[in-house]
Image 1 (cartoon, rainbow, N blue to C red):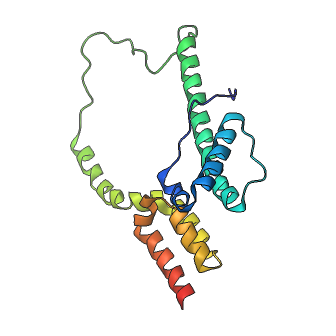
Image 2 (spheres, helix red, strand yellow):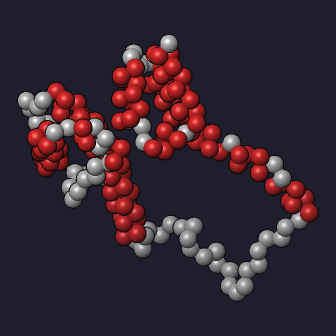
Image 3 (tube, rainbow, N blue to C red):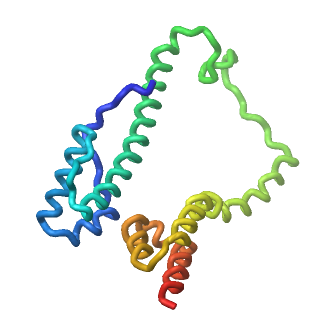
Length: 184
């Protein structure tokens, strides 16, 4: 299933381009050439300026994440297509087939004791976002707490975190607390 794939394009995300705007035209040209060479033949260019090399590594990591995500999607699509192709060939029961009843089928009746069961479910919806965000927040907390100086913290905040993460109140609070530690 993990056959090689050839993706037709690549994405450059805005939140990674903030540093690119601070570079000279010549540096941007070298950086873009490195990205294009990497996308065409997957070789990492040698003898790059250290500044360009660091920026290239950020983009390379994002490209690799995007490729993994794309590969998962390709594999899922192949699996779905294979299942559709083989559906008529197997004689096993499928949940999508009919149950054998002919005519109108009524829905199950709702009794009085079933009506009260949904009362507690509304309370869980309030905490859903906190549960979903818990693990990425832990990762962000560890990254922010392990930063050694103010410049690295600012660089991490500006270049690594997207606008969505910057608007998250808990992550923003962690960043501001760490920043105030360096200022004191």
